[in-house]
Length: 285
Ligand SMILES: Nc1nc2c(ncn2[C@@H]2O[C@H](COP(=O)(O)OP(=O)(O)OP(=O)(O)O)[C@@H](O)[C@H]2O)c(=O)[nH]1
Ligand SMILES: [Mg+2]
Image 1: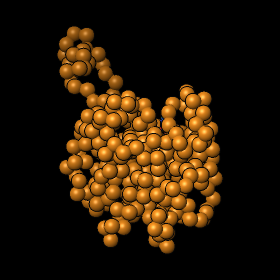
Image 2: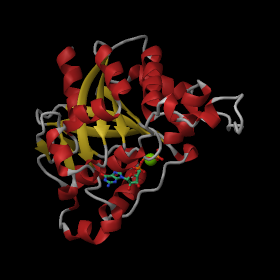
Image 3: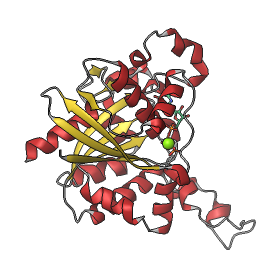
C-alpha cells in the first residue's frame, strides 16, 4: 500500500475545515466521484462530527491549535481501482500565522511537507487583507516631525500584513523545507458562491487571484518549475449559513457543492482537486 500525503494550508477562516467536512460527507454518500472510500481503516469521528454539522448547514468550529489534526488517513480508490492511502492535515490557520510571525515550524509539520505529493492552499475571498499605498496613509502617521504626528501602534504582522505577502512567505517556507523539490499545488478559492455570477463566469479562479492578489500570482508564475499549479473555485458550503433554510431546501447536501476549474467547467465533484494531485504524481513516475 503506498501512502500519499496532501498538505492543507490556509490562514484562519480560509475554508479548510468546511472543505474536509463536505469531502467526508460526499465520500460517504455520493456516487460517481473521482475518488471513493475503499475501506474504513481508523476512527473517523473527527470527520464524522464536522460533516454532520456541515450537512445540517451549521458552522464547523474554528480549528484551535491544540485540537488540530496532523494526519487524517483515508483508504481510497480511484476509477481504475488503484488503492490510494491519502493522509491530510487539518491545521489551524493560527499555526500558519505563528509560522509567518515567528519564523518557526513544528518538526512534524516540516516532515509532512517534505513527504507530501501535493498542497491545497485555501483563500477565502472575504478574508483577503489588501495592501495599501504609502500615499494612502495619512501624513500624520507617515511623518514623524510634522505637527500633529501621532504615535503609531507597533506593526502586528498577522493583523496588518497583506494576505498575499503572508501567503508568498508561507510558500517560500515550503520551498525551503523541500529544498526546491517540485510539488503539485491547488489554489482553492473557497466560498466561490460569494462572488458575483459575472465574476465567476468571466474571470475564473486564476484571473481572480491575478487581479486581487497580483504578488501571489506573479510569485507562482515565476516559480512554476517548483509549484505545479491548478486553480479551483470551490463552494464547499454552497452558500451563506445565514441562508440556512435555503441550503436545507436542497435535498441532497452534496448538490450544494460547486467546484469550478480554471476553464470555467462547473464540476460537481469535491474529490477532483485531490484526485488531480494523486494522478499527476503518478504520471510523473
Ligand atoms: N459562503 C460560504 N462560506 C464558506 C464556505 N466555506 C467556508 N465558509 C465560511 O468560511 C468561514 C471559515 O471556514 P472554516 O472552514 O472554519 O475555515 P478554516 O480555514 O478551517 O479556519 P481555521 O480553522 O480558523 O483555520 C466559516 O464562517 C464558513 O462558514 C463556502 O463555500 N461558502
Ligand atoms: Mg479549521
